[in-house]
Image (cartoon, rainbow, N blue to C red; front, side, top):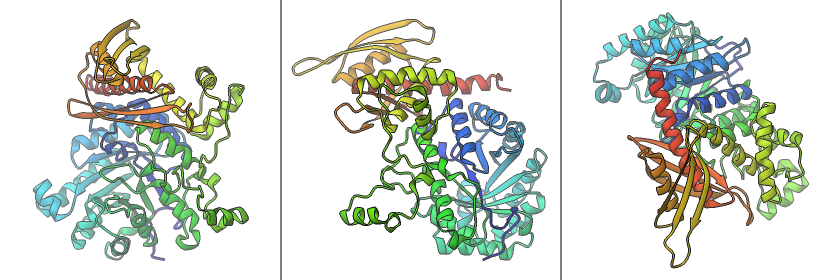
Length: 529
């Protein structure tokens, strides 16, 4: 195997999670500070080594999120490294340093374009200027913390000689990790592996830094390229839960980790990830981002360990390993749920919630238990999927304490009738407001009534409905995206009544838009410390 750069043990791969930074750049995503902190706590339970908590200089809200994660998730000797991204400009670097300084193990991640196509069309600067900017940026980051990562953006399309020279220069300036991004997902495993081998061969001081990779999935090869880089000696892999990220996304953390774990005979390396938390992490991130996981998604998809073919079923029942290369329990797969009913108690509910990624205090459990009992009275069985939807609704109720909440909804519709909705919302100040409107359908009438009460201009851009579970008593889950001032915000609502679910989703989207805008305005006013 190719000799590796400095990274502790040669056979240990550092897992760098950027769900809260690159993942949030997914079109249509937008998280509140509380949601980011909740995900960060789960990432710590998952056992990732580095959490890129955000881009501190991008907005006051992101600065607050990185700061809180550094304080709350990055505390203690066993905490993960907390990282903030920064452009190679002084203001970004200083802002990042200010945010991550509260962590036990802070890191600043500086990036700067390196390919000729980026230099010519994006940066409009020559190679020498870019090289000097890179060196000065690393030196400035080094004045804030010892752990500095540098990424030459679009490295896979950068002239190799220039890339090697830039890596040498930034390592000399103090970079402890050099990250080789396949920024536009252009490379392939053979080519990318050769690039990493070229870095080891042609950068004379490469032994002073960890070699990292950050692969995008535009051609569907992000995980394969990342694993090819590991074979070539890279010892940090960057990615996102569920493969989220710009455009087609990043390397999927669960795919990279289980590729390494399942094929130890081939890769001969390990990670520090608690693989049983992969399933809960996937479900939590999917729920909070409002991005469903495709059924046949590797490792964490609903069908990942289900066998339909008669031939497969016959062999599986005789010997599991005939058609399964991983134990579902090893990755926290939900599988066929142990069903809860209305006679189930708090202990059973707590255990099932923990399995799907929610760890609650006693007070939080009491609140959820009351909602669980209400749901259980309406459904004969409550599955894991129902519980995930229930927790989503509880999170949205908590959000609505700062915003609006659907208090009452009555709809009149039918053949020959003009659809009419009467909506009562509980407002942020605790008052109730009611509005009756007509529409082209019950959902349209409901949304118009909500618009009239809230008076917050949004445009509904996407509406989809899915059944959470099977059966006529299934909960309906509605996902809505709205646009406000050029930004897109998503909302989700669940109920056995699809119109009620729609109202909750629409209000949830509006609340998120108001909350994120308020967080940015508040932080900009200087209330964040």
